[in-house]
Image 1 (tube, rainbow, N blue to C red):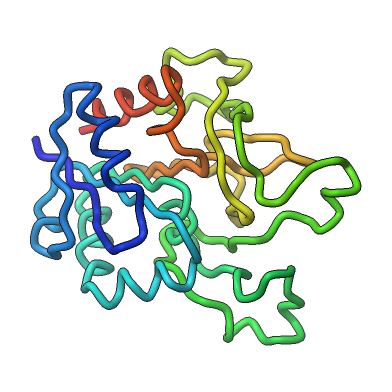
Image 2: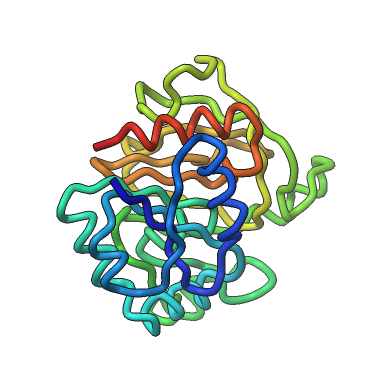
Length: 220
């Protein structure tokens, strides 16, 4: 079975590929729509801005192949920005939180709409709690249920590496696979059918990340 890592110009591609190689999976990195459409498993990484990522996926002709793969029931894993672009839209249009009612929802950059919800920025009040934005470093992801990605990891949660200023806010909390606390809890992983995604970087998360990637690779 072939695992493909989507190259749309905004991901830590080699880091993800090396992490998969360490667990015995020789993944292919590709920006070709036909390669994505033909994958047995797909990983969508990402680092950067939501709007740029969504535009790059569309410009590369990758949206339809990704959605087609999901509809076909093949396993898909989003990482960091690769999680966020699965949602409907993002408030990432300025350096500070935006008043959506003031600017108009129609102006927000649109994602793939796989997970209903919006990407929002951490509160500007976090510095008052001694917390910085972006949220960078190690933090604990606590499983919200029996998501197969977290099989073999502590029920009370495992530590993963984060680097982000925005996070996913799904409309339906039943898709949340793990929660993390950073001045309040946020969804650090989601799962819906054959689609899985993490806000943290499993490829940078040592043994816990390796276990999670191994679990993903067992999805059929």
